[in-house]
Amino acid sequence: MRGTRFAALSAFVAVAEHGSFTRAATQLGVSTGSLSHTIRELEENLGVRLLNRTTRSVAPTEAGERMLARLRPLLDEFEAAIDSVNAFRERPAGQLRITVPPPVATFVLAPLLPRFPAQYPEIILDVSVDPALTDIVAGRYDAGIERNGEGSQAPGP
Image 1 (cartoon, rainbow, N blue to C red):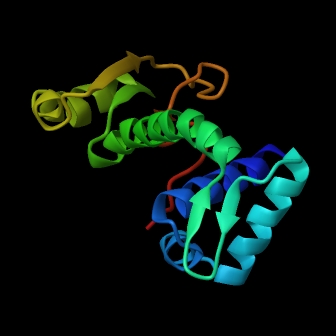
Image 2: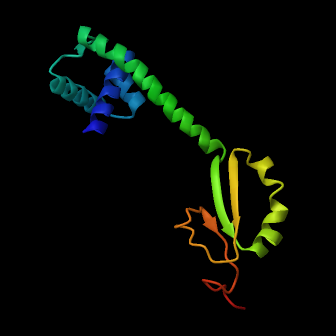
Image 3: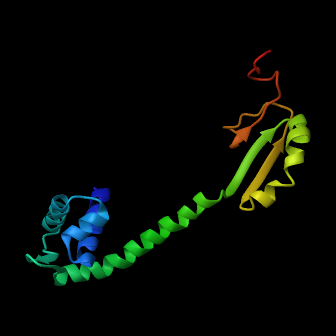
């Protein structure tokens, strides 16, 4: 399974870089025994020893060094990809498509629209003004507002 192999390779890199199962386990948030088992399974699956272990140290074998040299840039790129997506959490971005009837556009949206780009510069707002009911799913809208009396009813007094 790909996810399991990725986790095992990440574990290998952590152990090799820390030179310690204990420090790597702490960084990864797993037990030392579990980490040791993961590395043993990885080595068995690959059919090659990746780490030399002594009572005092852990160091990559020649095969481990070669794998580490190839994995470091990949894991750095993976982290950079995650970081690039995390930027979207800080501020909303993208396209927002909504559909509204003319009265809502005139009396609700019109007063708000001038402030919207200043508050959300990364959002491209696409407003469709249509007096007919619109199927927001079929029209690929993010949201829609309908006039009272059409479609679902607003609660009465």
